[in-house]
Length: 356
Ligand code: PEP
Ligand code: MN
Image (tube, rainbow, N blue to C red; front, side, top):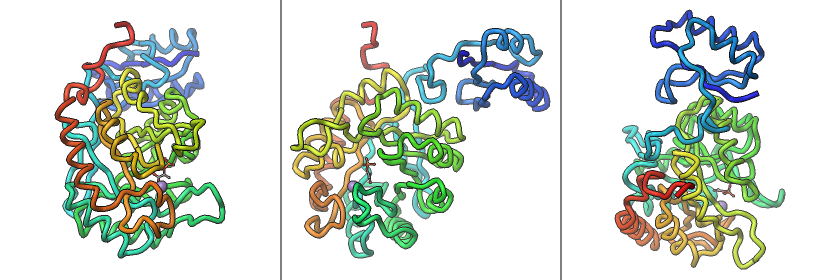
């Protein structure tokens, strides 16, 4: 079995394509229709050599190619540069571009705790120049006795407060059964590190066709992260952002070991945008700004951080929450560093290839 691309003749109409799709089903192939911008009109399918030779003779097939990688949808598509992910947000459905010319800073509390807390965060994020507000309504906690988020009421609050400040909502969904509902409130649907390998969740999220923020599991290889992304894209999503948030380390001085090499290494494998989360990545407030700077220097398309108006009383992750007064510095340093290293913001083109 090999993954192959069946590119169809330009004149192939709807009926001819449907007939070919039936042939794929008949040989037992799990096929995926490519979108026009996903690499031309055609299908991706896993088929053996005999079936490939048989299918290649179908009248609608122009060419059969071996898929460029085991992640044909999430991998490099050629042409250089990063795919832009557009997040429509705010009452006017403004466009926030992730993976574009400017790095993006997503900020907000770990968990939505109260209107006062969220309003203070949103106000500070908007004032610093932010466009996207993060906040958890469903929290995947290590202990079943810890605060697990406010659920539906937190989602409503997120939407209300974000709209008031013309911000987009970034929030996590944990359970496939909640996907449809959370998608009604979220502009960018987050899949958390603990759930990166939950194929049922990846599929449900992909089906919504909403932009997705996929976080790397602390024990996942980059290849496994891309396989998870492939599931989301295969299920129907077209806009996906990857996020490095630290892998399991050996030293309790940091909550995780922030793997910034993931940024340039992902550039060699994918043109999906890559964000870095230095908050969960290190878990120590004083390290968040320096590591956010390092992430941008490594070529990340932006950062996602946690903040709180009074970290001492935060119900989760207080030790890593930035003060609201430090947000302007985070935005300023991000902007300044991106300007300084701009060529690498343009993606793999500017980086040495594996062969060099
Ligand atoms: C979060 O961003 O709210 C979160 C729980 O992070 P992670 O999934 O990376 O642990
Ligand atoms: Mn958190």
